[in-house]
Amino acid sequence: MKAEELIAKTPNLPVPSPAATRLLQLLAGDDRDNQAIINILKQDGVLSTKVLALCNSAAFELAAPVSSISQAIMYMGYEEVHRLVMAVTFGGALGSNLAGYFIEDGALWRHSLLTALLSQTVVRIVRTSQTDPSVAYTAGLIHDIGKLVVSYALDADKQELIRERVERGGRSLLEAEREVIGADHAEVGACLLRKWKLPEVLVEAVANHHNPPVEPRLELSSIVHVADMIAHEGGSSPGWSSYAVRTNEAVVEAMGLTTDHVEVLIISAYDAALQVDEALSAPV
Amino acid sequence: MGDMLTSNDASANLVTYSLGSCVGVAIYDPIAKVGGLLHAMLPDSTINLDRASKRPFMFVDTGLPAMFHAVYALGGLKHRLIVKLVGGAEFLDEKKIFRIGQRNVEATKAMLERNGVALAASETGGHESRTVRLDLSNGNFSVDIPGKTPFLL
Image (cartoon, rainbow over all chains, first blue to last red):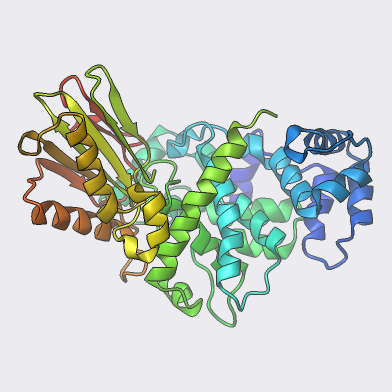
C-alpha cells in the first residue's frame, strides 16, 4: 500500500492547528521575529493559554504573573515557546501506546524528546553545520511520526511477517516494513509532513533519517540519524527489535564522527534523559 | 541507566529497564540473600574520568568493582556469588563506530575473568532491548523483551 493510503486509514493523527502549522513554517524562513510569533499565537486560544500557564508556572519564577503573550515570549524566549507548541501538538499522539511496534505508553514520546535534544547536541559537535537549533530540535522530535501510521497498519499477522523477516531474514525493521506493508515509517512520516504543508527541511530530515544522503552535501537528516542512533544507545530504544536498524556509516564518517565522539554523545544522552525525565514528571 | 542497585532485603526485586547496548550485570549470594544489579552504558571510564568519579556506574570498568564491593558490604561473599550478564545489543552495522554493545560485553567478561569470577549465564548481542529483574528471595533473574514471553536466565 502507498503512504497516502496508509495515512488515510489511520485515525487520530495529530494534525497541527493552523497556528502550530504557521509556527512550524517559520522554521524554514529567516523572518522569525517575535511580532510574527505573537500574532500567530494570539489567534490560537489553546496555545495562548498554555504558553501563559507555563510562563506563570514555578519553572520561570516570575515576581508577578504575566497576562499577555508578548510578555510571555519576552520572558520565555522563542525556543521555549516553540518547544511548548510542539509538545502540545505532537506529545499526545507520540506518547500513545503503539501496539504494532510493542511500544508502551509514553515510550516513543520520551525517545522523541531525547532525539530532539540530542539533535541539538550533534549540531554543536559537528561544527561545520549551520543548522538552526530549533530546526534540529523539531526534526528530532517528529522523526518517528510515521510510526503512528505504520503501527496502525500492523495487525497481528503483519507483525508476525515483520518478525520473520527481521529475525530470520536479516532485514532491518525499515526494510521489513516496506516489504510487508509497502511503505516504511520514514517515507510515511515525510508524506504526513507534506500533507500538513510543513517546511521541506523537516520533510527531508524525516524522510531520510535512516538513510541520509552524503552527496551533494550532508542534510539535516544526517544530524537526526546520528541523534536517533545515540538515543537508542543512550537508553531509549522503544519497541521490539529496536536495534534492527542500520547506521549509515558513510554519513557518520563524512560528519567526522569517531568512536570517541559516539561515547561522548552517549554521556550527553544520559544527561538529556535526566532532563527529559524531569520534564515529564513535572506537574503541569 | 548508568546506575546500580543493591539490597539485602530478601523480599526485594532489583529491576532495570531497556538495556539496549548497555549491559546489565546481576550478582547474587544465595546464602546471604543479598544481590546487586548494574546498568552500565560504556566500557571504559577513561573517556571521561571526571564523570566516572561522580557516576562510576555509567562505566563497566568502574561500575563492576563498585557493585561487588557494595554487595560485600551487605554480607555477600565473593566465592558464593552467582553472576549473570545481559544486554549489549547491536545495530545491523558492518563497521565499528557504533559497536558499543559488543565492547560493553567484552569489557565485562574480561574484567570478571581477570578477577577470577565465573559467569553463570549470559544473554547478549542481538537486536532487542531487554528489561531484567533479579528476585532476591531465590536469585531468579528474568529477562523481558518487548513482544516476547519473559524467561528466566
